[in-house]
Length: 191
View (cartoon, rainbow, N blue to C red):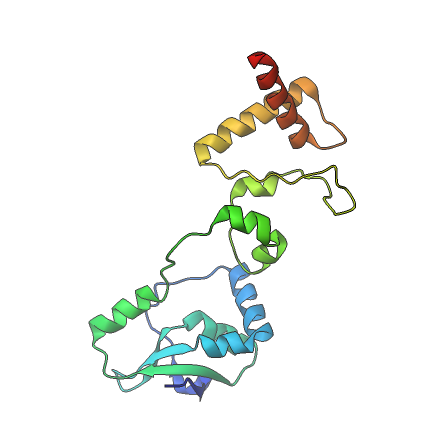
């Protein structure tokens, strides 16, 4: 079965939608719909007709984004004959995120600015990296990405702060200089 375009006015939002969206995420969703209409077609709004109306059980936020963009009809997929319990299951399953990102692969193969624009929440420590401008023209530089638990990150931050206080910045790059000093002291201590 193919998705069917339906007018927004023919659809009814879910009365007690348990899913919310931040203003920033809503703006990202609008941009995604605007820039990727084929993706919207591939992930249509899911409808149920159990009550005699076309009620949105998957895609209430996409409905609102399309409405905000002035789109008059949207791709939909109707699931007929659902029980109320089955509707409730679909409502939750549509919003459950399964799986996890391979952060090592993400760090090495994806642009973090694009990922942020697309709504991916990157580990908090990544926001604090004080990295130099790495480019093919600078073969003497490398990128090292560390993903740590909250406890490990707290220890790393404390060590960086202590090393920074003792050794200061190097070429305006506080974190690489502090980590280098910590590593050098460790290596020197081992003899």
